[in-house]
Length: 190
Image 1 (cartoon, rainbow, N blue to C red):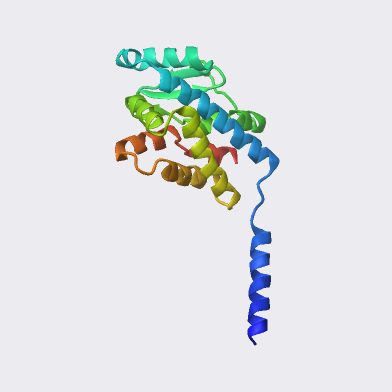
Image 2 (spheres, one colour):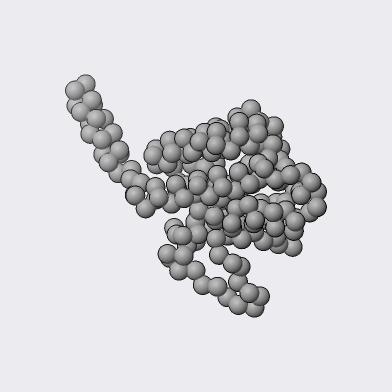
């Protein structure tokens, strides 16, 4: 009887592992793009002079746009949005194809609107984590671990940020989580 229990548990464990979704090469490429964009934007935020931030969201967006080569816009609630493409002109509707969605996912996952008020907190988080390169490397290593264990992108990034930012002040951690805001974009793309 003990042998049968062992055999059955071995088979079901093997079947459960076989049923876990494998991460495709395309998903790995998208994840890598996401972290490249993350490093680019965080690098600019790390270097932004406090004097620029004190001038307000428009000047901050302009400075970030110049440093990253990305389009940075500010909405009415002073959220900063990063994009690889120019924002659509007012009154036009911009359709997003599947390939456009995949191409934009790095930016979308990086920031779905960073509150301007949290720029300096994000800068503090970068510093507390040892600089951009170290912070992104640490977050990505946790992220990869969670992704390869079958977690979704949003769960993986949330868990990775919690693991990587353990020990940071709650407000600093919150700003970092806002930077990696993963809302409807992932659901709409995948």
